[in-house]
Image (cartoon, rainbow, N blue to C red; front, side, top):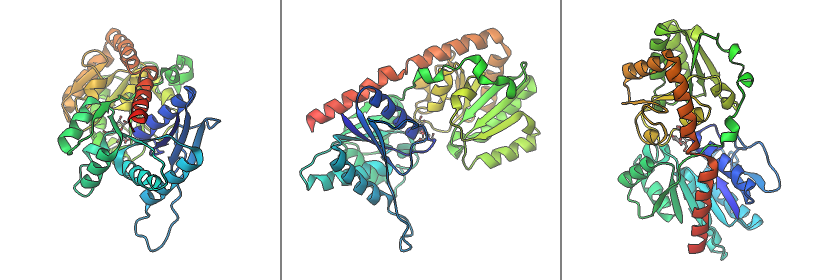
Length: 375
Ligand code: GMT
């Protein structure tokens, strides 16, 4: 199939999923066209059957807001015509599903029908899409998609609860390419980060409020009072600076490393002992899955789709949002008991295998085939 993929090209989970999906589909013989405003961060390899088309939005002083949707839908029309794209798969409803629908309408005028598959990722439904300013447009564009998927059962339930949806929603969970998380211990360069007796705790995100970054710092503060430990904070966002200030206030700055965005999260995770994800809401928690794929157990909140990924007492522990003391206790219990930690590390890897890319990508292929047949 010739598939057009529209996504955010940044470090966010939806862009990562879209990129990994495109790469795997190309390996399976499909031709992939990424259409977005920058080359996706994890898209290193462009080749015969994997292409990237940039959406340009020229600055014009009249516009207070530059019309990205307009530029995107025009680019989609051009790319479908030029490359014979058969299906458009848009990741994150806002504004991608909306722009794709406009492109579909324009193409119809020329007797070309290109079906749209929309994948809902989380904040497009729970935080942003649900805002009254966007809700009518989001409802409309989901209902006008030819197929809709959600990355967890929890997100599907949220979508049906929050929006008036007439469309069937298939759950196709996020996935992991286990081959990419197979670093040898020697590759890890653990010694650069901590001494042998120190445990390493990691968090990776876009440092938004929803991630509850202060909870992470406070949990780590409790941990380091009980055992030698270091905290690795990976990612960028508005909560980073306040977090650095909090570390200074607590007197733990020398034990916390802020990496910023990294393309080498597998190499950071491979020397980690524990992953923290205390989010307020999370449709899936891809970073937790990436941690598990590296054999890192997860102490998390029990919100949204996280319980579909992290299993209580097996791959980690789950607590109510904001239960800092309980999360600290669970983390300390795990980190203090080497035998238990080794078992949980094994379990985490086994849990990640359930989300192997080889099992999930065929589910998307089925969605495409069904959609192409019925449209
Ligand atoms: O985590 C974020 O805030 C980024 C956001 C995104 O759109 O990239 O992540 C969402 O999609 C990811 C991939 O499907 C999920 O793993 C995240 O759980 C989800 N984030 C939230 O629901 C807050």
